[in-house]
Amino acid sequence: MKPVTTILNKVLVREFYLANATFFLVVVGLAGGFMRSIDHIILAELLVSSPILLLIPIGVWAAYSFKVTRFNRALLKRGENEFLYYVSTLPIKFQVTALTKALLLQLLPIFLYASFLIATAAKHRLYVTLLLIPLACIILLGLTVADIFRALLKGHREQKLSALARWIHERFTKPYPLFFPEWIVRRSPWMAIGTKLAAGLLLFAVAQVYKTDTYDARLLGMGVIFAFAANVNMIWEMHRFDNHHFDINRNLPIPFARRFLYFIITLAILTLPEAGLLISHFATAVSSIDLLGALLFGWSITLFLYGWLFKHPYGPDQLHSIVFFTCILLVVLILFKIPFLILASINTAGGLYFWRKHFYTFEIPINEEKA
Amino acid sequence: MLTLQNFSKHYGDALALTIPSLQLEPGIYWIKGENGSGKTTLFRSLTGLLPCEGQVTFHDNISLKETPLPYRRLVNYSEAEPLYPDFLTPKELVRFIGQAKGASREQQDRLSAQFGIDRFFDKPCGACSSGMLKKVSLTLAFMGAPKVIILDEPLITLDEAARQILFGLIQQYNEKQDVIFLLSSHQLLEDTQLLLKGIFTIRDKTIHVG
Image 1 (cartoon, rainbow over the protein chains, first blue to last red):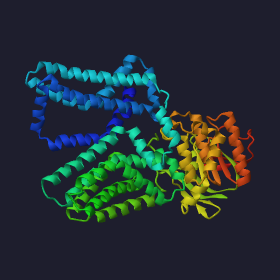
Image 2: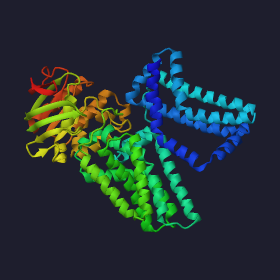
Image 3: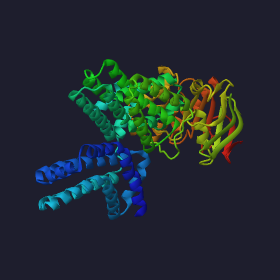
C-alpha cells in the first residue's frame, strides 16, 4: 500500500500543488490581504445561516473539485504517467483506499474551509448545516475518487478529431509562435486562466485607484511589475517548451534575431489581456509615453526571466524567490522615479545577454522528464 | 570530414563519455554499444542538443561551438523514440523544421510522400502511433542539405516497406551527396543492403573501432 500511496502523492498531489502554486498564492493573497479575521468570521456566519447561502461555498468547492478532476485526467494522458494505469490491476478496495488518500490531500483546501464553517455552525447550533457540510464534502470526495478510478479503468481512449478540427488542420498550418500558446492552454488551462485572471484583476484594481484620486505613473508601474511577474509559471513553461519538450528546436539553424521575434510574438499573444487592460483603462490616467513604457517594461520583465532561465535552470519554486526579489528591487527603482523605458532597456539587455550567452550551453537538469 | 578533438560529456561531475580524437569521412557508420553506454549522449551532443566539452568541427571551418548556425544546417538528427507535442500535426512539423533547415516545399512534400507521412499529414501527433512518429522523425532528418545525418535506432517500430525506403535514401544521400551517416542499432546492420564504412563500439565511456 505504501509504495502506491507514495507514487500517487508524488505524481498527483505534489504536481497539482506545484502547477497551481500561483492560483493558491492569489487565493491566499486575496483572503489574507483584503479581509481581516473578523470579516472571515462574519462571512462564515452569513454562509452557514441558511442552506440556500450554503450553496455558495458548496458551488465553489464543486468548481475546485472539477479543477482537480481536470488536472488528474490531463496528468494521466501524459506519456510518462502511463504506468499509473497499473493501479487499476490492484484489488478494488486497495485502489479506492489509495486514491481516496491522494484525493483527500488534493481537496484539502475544501476540508479546511469546511471545518471552519462546521465550527461556526456548531457555535450557533445550526444542526442542518452541520449535517449538510460534511455530506457535501463526502459527495465531492466520492465523485472525484470515482472519476479517477473510472479514468484508470478505461485507460487511453483513441484521440478523434472533430470535423471542425480536421477542416482547420487541412487549411491552416500553425506557425511556431502559436505552438506554445496552444501547448499551455492544453497542458495547464487553469494555470493559464488563473494567471490571466490574477494579472487582469490586479491591473483593473490599479485602474480603479486612479479614478478616485490623482497619482503619477509610479502606481501603474508597480501594478505592471506584479501583473507581468505573475506570468512567471507561464514563462517557465515556455522556456521548457522551447528547450525541452520541443528540443529539436535547439538543433535548428534559426538565427537569434528570429528566435527573439518568435518569443516576442508568443509573448504578445500570451499577454494580450494585460496589454488590452493597460490600453483600455489607463489611456486617460497616464501619458501615452508612460503607457507605452509600462507595456514595454512589463514585457521586459518576462524577457529577463526567460533569459535568466538559460543561466540558471531553476525549477518553478526556485524561480519564484528570484521573481520576488526582482519585484522588490523594481518597486524600489520605480519609487525612485526611474523611467519605465530605462528599466525596460535594462531588463531587455539583461535578458538578451543571458539568453545569447547561455543558449548553446544550456542543459535541462537530468531529473526533469520530457512530456 | 567530421572531426572530434578532446570531446567529452559530463552529467554534473560524472563523466559520461570521452573521445580523445575521431575523424569521420563520408560513409555509413554503425555505432554499437550496450544500453546506457552513451550512444544517445554522443548523438545528442553532436547534434547540439546537449552541451559538451572539446572541439567538434566539420571540414575544419564549421564548428559546433564557434559557428553554431552553419553547423546546425549540416547536422540532422532522428531520435530513437521521438516525442512531439500532442496537438501538432506532421504537416506543421515538416513545414516548420523543413523551412528552418532550408528545405524547399518540393523537398518537404517529396520526403513526406516517400515515407508515407503525407497520408496522416493533418492528424495530430497525439493520435499517431509510435511507428508513424518514427517516420515523421526520419523524414525530418533528411530535410535540407545535411552533410551529417544521425539516426538513433532508426529501425525500431518501422515496418518493412519503410525500412527499404530508409535504406534507399541512406544509400542515395551517401553516394550522391557525400553524407556521413551515424546509425545506432541493436539489430544487425551488416545483414542489410547498407555498405558500412566503419563500425564503432562505445564501451567504458569511450569509443572503440570495431
